[in-house]
Length: 157
Image (cartoon, rainbow, N blue to C red; front, top):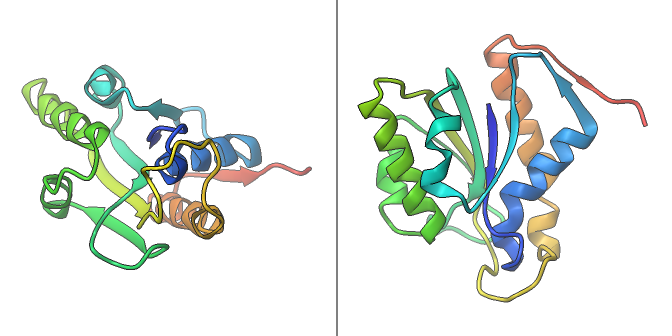
């Protein structure tokens, strides 16, 4: 499952959703792959997340770097980074992932993201710097699929 999270109403907070939109528009994946716009549903995504064996989450990540820096978080790095309370949806996301443990169905998870420039301004547009990171993050997603030996195809326009 590829899961994009964030609020498209708060400038760069919508990055994860915008990446999911581009993936859905430009690529096809195997039947067992779901491409999900999780928005800000957070804990309400638990049922969807618990169905996945492998979960790729796309989001903005405030990690103390420079705006536009790209990140790949996996394993123990995920709770530590999210505990920084980057945003409310990330807190809910961590709780949903933790609750999956109660169901004994925690997917192997990787979070791919970008250091945001602006998550405070009310706007449906990403800042140009962060918008330019959509394609590099899509490449990161495709590398995960290559690693998993899961097929995908680029749609012809």
